[in-house]
Each structure stands twice: as structure tokens, then as C-alpha cells.
Length: 255
Ligand code: PEP
Figure 1 (spheres, helix red, strand yellow):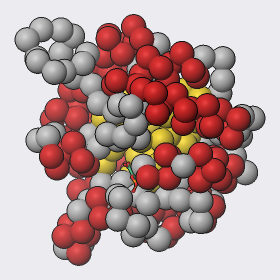
Figure 2 (cartoon, rainbow, N blue to C red):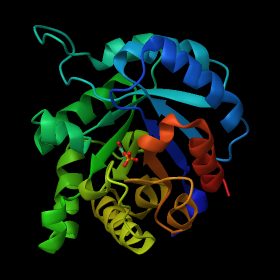
Figure 3 (cartoon, helix red, strand yellow):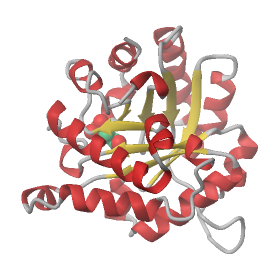
Figure 4 (tube, rainbow, N blue to C red):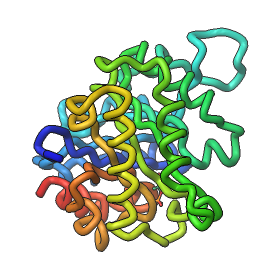
């Protein structure tokens, strides 16, 4: 596989952290820290910080994303945000199917698929999260499960739209736990995901698709993970709130 054929992308997932004012301060610190990065840099903020983030990041190398999106265009969905609303703000990316949404907000493979299609139709780039729980890993079903999650998430997505799909392999047991997958485990599953993408869309699309690893990636372990041939970047939670750590991960991805 040829890494040169695809973009390395480091995306921060801020989760439910930072008020708008705190976000502004964090972005002020991030802008100089990631200037001139050798990879694409994205920050996914709470909805309430998106306006601030888009304004602050204009003219910089930082793209702005949301952490979720609803699949309907508009209507009686109290508390939800549509893809058009995000696009209207200048948002370019959205995370879909994060394991915390699957775990706490009844997200299913089917709704992940609906959100993915709606976001793509609106012109967003989608970071689709897949990954197994610890029990599933111990049962030896990781590859089967991640293949299935990937296939369902991408149902109805065209080969052309795949240019705006990033897949994040995020083992649930590694998210926010400080327990990282080994570089070999990350490589094994990212390669399996690329294989499914190849089965669905052919080798050219598979080679061009960015596949990230996420799960306690930090300044200390990023280098080893990102050197693996099928690990094209990272989705970063905790470390994305620390400018120096996030910048170190961005630097590792740009090597
Ligand atoms: C995440 O939220 O997607 C994530 C990977 O979190 P953390 O880096 O904190 O494990």
C-alpha cells in the first residue's frame, strides 16, 4: 500500500469540553503550534463553539468539524442539528458514529449510515468511527465486526463520495482509558478496513482512503502508530485539548 496516495489527517475530538470563550483561547494556542503541518489538521468542537472555531480558523491550516449531525434535513427533531446548518456555518467535517454516541445515545449502524449519507449529500467530509468493545476483542470477532460496521456505514455511498470519507478505527476499550492498541493491532484492523473498502469500491479508492486510528493516541505513542502502513492519521480525544501534545501528534503524522 502506498501512503503517498492519501492524506494524513489528524483530527481532534473535543467531546463535551470547552465553552466558546475557552475554545477561542485553545484555538489561539493551537494555530501557531500546528502552522506548517505536513498533514491535514482538523478540530471537532461542541456545536456551541463552532462559530468561534470557524471564525478563528479562517485563513489557517485548521479545518473545523462537528461531533455529530442529524440525518434529516429539517423538521421536528428537538435539539438536533442538520448537515445544512453545519455547512451554513462554514463547518467542513463531521464525526459520525463515535462509540460514545453508540454507547450513550443509542446510535446504531443504521443511523450511522443515515448520518453519513446526509452529511455527504450536504458536502461535508465525514469521519466515520468503527471499533470493537473489549468483550468483542476477547471473543475474537474484531475483524468481522469492524468489517460489518464499515459496510453498513458506507451503504449507498458512491465511489466519488469516498473522497470525502475518512474512517476512524477506534477500539472502544482504548478510548479515554489510557490503554492504547499496539501499533500492530492498529495496523491489523486498519488494513482489514482498507480491504473492505477495496471489496466495495476497488483498489484505487481503497488506496486513496484515509484510515485513522483513535484511542488514547498521545505525543508519546503517535510516532509508532502513524508509521504503520495503513494508519493514515489519528482521531484524538484527550490529547487534542493540550496544544503541545496535539502539535506533537500532528508533527508525527507529517513525517
Ligand atoms: C476519541 O474521543 O475519539 C478518542 C480517541 O479519545 P481519546 O484520545 O481520549 O482516547
